[in-house]
Length: 201
Image 1 (tube, rainbow, N blue to C red):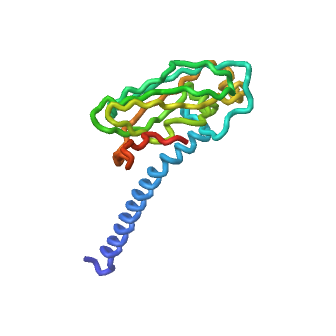
Image 2 (image 1 turned 90 degrees about the vertical axis):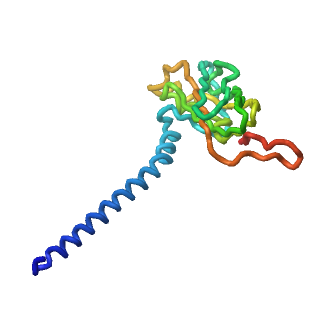
Image 3 (image 1 turned 45 degrees about the horizontal axis):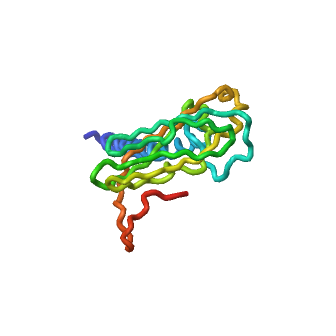
């Protein structure tokens, strides 16, 4: 060991480097945790990646032009559900509020919980696709063999015909995929009936 204390100084430098590395790791972890909700908010505001809009009221303007809307339904591994739209497509007027229905049936021998994620293609139409009501807003529980009708209430914002990137769109596709969700299983009520598997907003 030298008499000028160099090893001790080197030890302090090593400690500072370790602290900097740990701070960097924790900082990156915090940023990663925040990235998902921030990205979701960004998509909801801008319609990026075909993210639809959630609204509380219907449109007051209805155009004399229709929009072809087709539906796609998928189930991710882990859910033994039969999930499909009742109608494969509709042709509402732009600005007209309509309801369409999907059905889901649990083909397994146990209660399963799922939640649907969704998007609209082409992506430019996402910001103009407004949902008033949707089963995708909440998780859904299905008992063995249970079949559920699930409505979606929506309209296409009339502003879609004004924007340069969307004015020539004539067909949009609303696509859903149900993913398994973990959570406590529903219990029977005191009256012998089952707890409702879907919350209505």
